[in-house]
Structure formats: structure tokens, C-alpha cells
Image 1 (tube, rainbow, N blue to C red):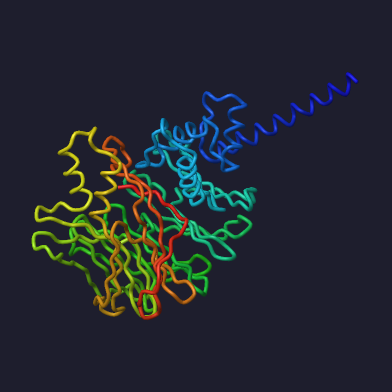
Image 2: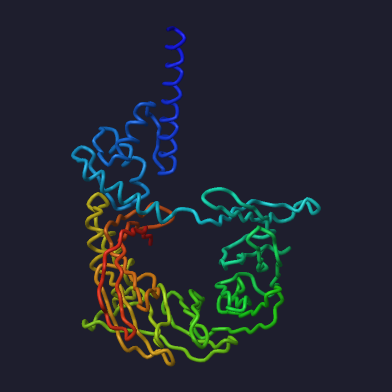
Length: 440
């Protein structure tokens, strides 16, 4: 009998340890803190969340303490909080986490110093790791700082940059890696320092756009064959707009559309398949009030059924040059910090921001249709089931944090899908479960 009791006790300890480890893993995955909690409390909070009860007294405290700083603009008073409020906050955080899950390709970095040259600059190396169902398949080392990658069915293209002997000069690289992690080829681009965008063509050739770090107006197009050889290059320089820089490039039927911006303005440039400039156009609109115009910021662009669709947002721009966020800051600076609530900041963003969608002629950029939506920003564009889907992000929380180095305003948006037919006619809109972080 004694042996039986000892065996049962050992089994109970193992079960308890497994339950606790499962709960701790849940805390780590969901970025919750276990600080100051007993083993029993960790398990109770875990079960309270996964059963969607949110009734345990410490659950709300741990969720708010762990997450509140990561979701700015969302205030919860724990003294009066109820289960539904905590559940809503947790649902919001869960939606955000799901979108930030790591890709099956992970890029990490580490410093590298040339020991043959003491006192030389510290270089960067990269490790590209492939996962399938969280299991590591392979890992490949690259002798440069990898900025990004694009995938094909049979390989991935990784691109990045490395320091030369002069710390202010960088060299760009492209590497082709097969699905087993083996490097097929690596190409060096000595006259460029950063890649903006890379496209994989149907014949497995590559079109790549790059610039030089000290020359923002420089845009160079490369064509690279399937063996990694540079077979063509062409350079454009956009010098007519002071401080101009490339923000985005998208492919069109007859070439590419380049979005150029600076502090004061934005324009679009069409180039053909050989990189030669074809057309330029920009957009400036006036509001009904003569004393105030609108300034436009574009976030995404796409070609659909012979038209160009430009997604973005507008903010009022006054005669003194301030616009959008600057105007909100000016208003808040006249108040005592203690008077500034998240609700006030959210209302100011809703009043000042409009999501916009421009439908333009593919040849000369002439505006044919214009859509706007209050209290949000225009986001991604995509084609789905022969229809155009425009994502509009509505502000649902917003906070003011003048002492944070990474942002002044931060909050959360909720995505709605606006659907358009082949003629650019609006069909319907639908709410999604997607939430995104917003920083300015």
C-alpha cells in the first residue's frame, strides 16, 4: 500500500509540473509576465484565459500590467474592470500577436571583425534560417547585413549590404538560396549600397532597384539572369525635387511606378521595362475652406484593369505649413499634460485623418475617381477574385507619449476591406478581425 501511495504522489507531481510548464510556455508566447506569481497563480491565470472566463482576480492585473505599454492608447481602470473588458483587451492583443508571428524564414545578425586587420571596422554577418512547423530545416550564413528577402517556389532571394573599408561606403549584395539552404549564386553590386525593391520575373530573371546611401535621388535598375550575372543596368536621377527619395516601387503592365517623397511633397514617376523615364505626375488638392488645404501621404499602389489605384491618407495643412500630426501636437502643447487623455487624442486623430483612394489613368496619371473615409488611413491594396480590395485602418485607440523615443503617438487600428469592381465602382465594405499597431 505504501509503495502505491508513493507512486501516485510521483505521478501527481509530474502532472502538476507538466501543467505548470504548459502555462509558463503560454505566458512566454503571449508576452505575459510571471513576476511575483506563485505556480498556482500562473496556472489559474492560464486556465482563466484559455477558457475565456476572465473571472480570476489576478488575470486582469497580469494582462494589463504585461500588455498595456505595448498597446498605447488603451486605458483600463483595474478598480472597476469587469470580465468582458479584460476579455476584449485580451482579444485585441491576441489579434495583434497573430499578425506578428514569425515567418518561416528568419534572419538574424551578428558582428564580425576582420582579425587579419586589427582595429578595422566591425562588419555584419547574417544567418538565414528556414523553419517548417517551427522545426529548423536549414541555416545559411551570409557575409553581409541582410535587409530582406523574397520567395519563389524553388528558391529565395536574399538582399542586403556590407561596409567597405570606408565606413560611409556600402556595397549591395544579392544571394540566391535553394530550398535546401544551399547558395546557388551570390552577386556583388559595387556601385550601389541599398536595394529598394526586387522582382522575380516569370523566366526566373530578377529586376532589382537600388540606390547609393549618400545620394537619395539615385535609382539604378539591374537585370540579373538566372545564373546571377548582371545583364543590364540603367540609372535615373531625380534632382528636380530637393531632398527627394524613393519610397515605393510597384510593377505595372508596361513598366514600373516609382513613388518619390520628401518633407514637403510627393510625386509619381513611370519608367518602362528598361528603366527609362516615361511620365511624371503629382497630386495636390484644396479643401472647401480657402485658408486650409489637405496634404496627402501615400502608402500603397497597384495597377488594376488599366487603372492606377493609389492608397493613402490626407490631413489638413494650414497656411503656416503645419499639417496633421504637427497640428495635433500644437494643440496638445497648449494643454497641461495631465489634461491630455487617450480619448481626447483619439478624437483628434479621427477629426484630422481621412483614408483616401485615388483612381488614376495608367498613361498620364489623370485623376478619374476619388474616395475618402473619415477617421482612418488607407493601407494595402490587393486583387482578389477579380476585384480590388482596399484596406482601410480605422483608429480604435490612440495615446500621446512625447517622452518615447520611437513614437509620439501610438495606438491600434482595425482593418475594414472596401471592395471595388473592374470599373472602379465601390461594391461593399466588410469588417475584419485584423488589428494593427499605429505609430507616428
